[in-house]
Length: 207
Image 1: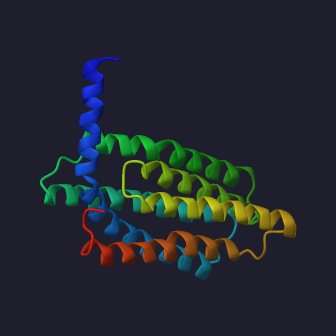
Image 2 (image 1 turned 90 degrees about the vertical axis):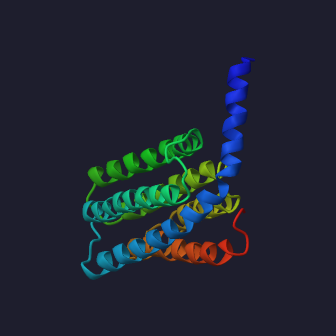
């Protein structure tokens, strides 16, 4: 094995361990903001009856873009506050872990929206987004705090359960149900996790 490569990998592992507290501090406000935006998007979808697949996809993909942009700004601000470089080898590894499942979920969601404008396609998008988002969180969990893996597993299991329920029931429920599901998983759950991280940060900042 190349000794230089081995040394580089060890250095990256050390940096990941040292930056775990930074990731945790940045994660709490990101989850809180994601939860608020998710609940807001769900409310908009329900109020304006954005139930056909293309308006539904536009609403939630647009919300995801806003969340990703806001997460970048918050993470950047936390790095500057802690006098840490933002784009370091550990950050690059986390981005590498997140990117494939997130891009896959985006591509499949767009494909479902283009194939049909019927509201039943919304549930296919919900399943796809839950599944790939859960995989992204689980992958990031190898470089971040342990709880992220369990949070990711929650989304994966929810996607599988929803898939089984739709298969058994033979129909996908009411047109509004997809926005309710998105609001719960990408709004309420994120908000709850952000509150948990905010309260536990003071007790265990290096977790």
